[in-house]
Image (cartoon, rainbow, N blue to C red):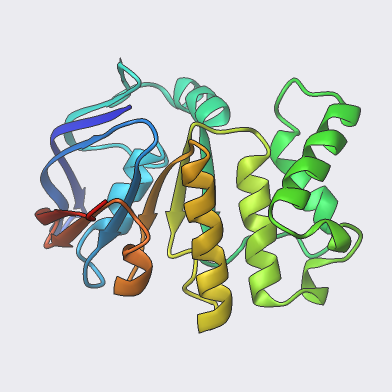
Length: 226
């Protein structure tokens, strides 16, 4: 599904040049669950942003499903994101003024989907993540773990081929963090491809493959025993 070759990302100002990614080679197949670990500033979030086409590489190749996306115009990247990608963030990014159902349906507003179909899909994903009984509540009426379940449902509603999760348990306590990880693992078993950035070794163990990064490079790859 994903292929990167000699990919680099350099940020430049008038006085300084910072290499966030340095010669990344990476392949991720359909149906994999991949975790990326490393200290703060190692480049893992930059890598996730480029995988999600929210940032562009300075050099190198990135192909998604056989399409070279490095250098594509923003309108084309937005179209690929809309039809293929779901995002889960550490900070939930829910709209306080909207109900849980409305927050989830928001992800379909720019799709050619009727209001009735949006409602049906929202019911489907809320049931999947165990949040259907909270459909009429507002985000501030939910616990952190429940809010992250809403964020997962929102990522799923457009039926993405790839889910990108940036520290999805970072704002959660141990119990709720484990619940979210078990939910991601179940989604992967159902066929979802997941790439997750995490600081937690125990949560990385839920993935089938782990990459350790340092100074913008992938230093080590480890596969979990079957």
